[in-house]
Image 1: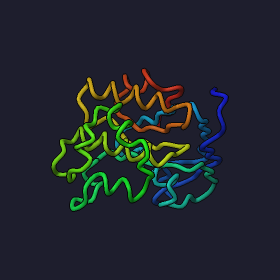
Image 2: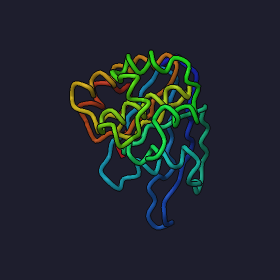
Image 3: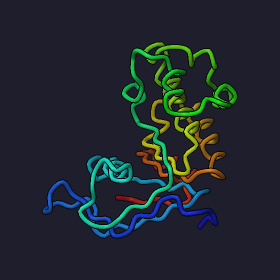
Image 4: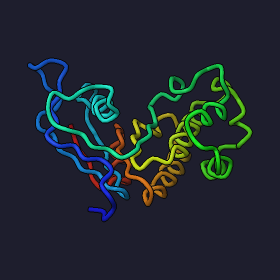
Length: 192
């Protein structure tokens, strides 16, 4: 286990949309800065629900969740940006923009693209902008829901390498259906 500070601690989590069918029963997870833990499981197994619980959008039936400041990368980049504002303006609304152009260039994003509206970018460009926004928020915990699903294989590899470089600053909890990706980048895999 990494020697970094704990950025997420889940103890005794119990949750279900009904008491008869629980998604989680006495679930435990600890994530430290410097680690990437991947959640794998079929559709309906509770992967996205776990993120909703961590974010505080759902309340557990039992147990507790302690988390450091976090940001999220959503699976669908089109739904995570408002269509009538430029990417740059939307990033500036939630994060400091110091270093944005440099980080964008490292991620393969032409800084000029940030002055465009979401519909003017491809899905891959928009997902990289989503990751850029999340990283500029300076989180200690990054919740990444299928962060590379909209990217082609080469860009996927580049973005994952860049995310792994951030591990000295953050811990990453990632959802993916890609077992090979999970094996390649994860310190631990939790199967639901």
